Image 1 (tube, rainbow, N blue to C red):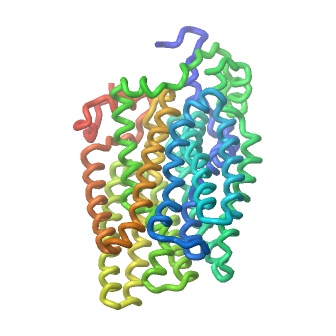
Image 2: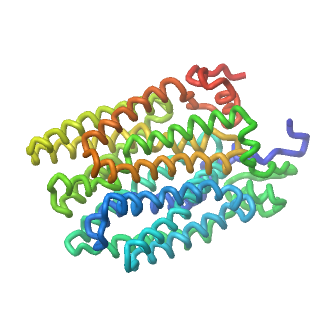
Image 3: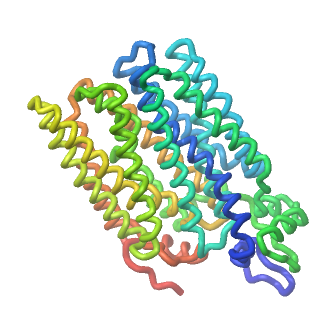
Length: 467
């Protein structure tokens, strides 16, 4: 519906933001909102170090449960976050996430048995899962569509940074084998996040949606938007039933959900969560195993900036093909390293596996991880964004949980070689998926996404002729 004279729909206001005047405020909002990604990344990495030193007896099954349950609970958090935040607000949910993670990080650190460690760590997953859905949507509601991709990268940068820090913390604490401190230190960034988020403004979109227009105008003024017209409120966030009825939204959920699932099942968090575990299995000491993983992740994160610079030049499809194709190549090298290990050439095996892991992380960071979060933030109309982002994040978490569950059991029953051969097949399928199904959304506005995704699935890969 066109805006009447003297009226403007809320969803057009974001494009009035003066980035020069509002840059500092938007950066602050983006960084603080994305801090949950840092905790997600820290948790990704720290469990790999904890597995080497936790004193409780660990079988393949109990290892699978300890590592993977947090992802399944996170999927629940991602799905229910939409209805909760629709009722209580984006800011309230972001604060609640920080509080929950703070409490459960401490409880996990003081666990007296394996069952309690699994329970507290899993419950922290609810907060992390909810945050992955809400934070991206919250950030998107504060930035103009032309800048959304740039700011969406903040979430992935925080995840990467948290992972790097966790491995260096694990390496520093390895001589004392202090697994409790490794887990408990997560409470520090959680406390900082909780305090900083209390100063965040509420989403003006949510305020308008709930009739608090004057307060929304005050917040918009802080980011350079003077509103003299009457604001036409957006509708309530879409229900799951509404999403199923809309072909464009349905296709976006399928494509982005599959992208996020593939980025997990091709093994990124096997390399991260179980990296030290794998190095120790092939004969390295605990501290050396953590050091190797820390170096690989640090080198991988440095390549994140390559992705940041190429995303608008190469596009989402180009980086996806490069990323998933590079992952496939690194897995071939991984299989060579495992063959050296099987033949008893342990030094060569360690060097080749280190090279393969580093290349895997480089290609993931350049072409897969950051792009997935951009697609999540830019593919849906604001009416569908919070609910849809929850579904997309749930796909990511469920896929992550499945692969983390499978790995230790598969390794115990069939060995490392067959597992990474399976991952190689999945990475090849991922390349085919990008080529055949992923549309190019570079340079498209939110309003144009309906045309991009509103076509039959088989036609999505073709360049859309915008009306």
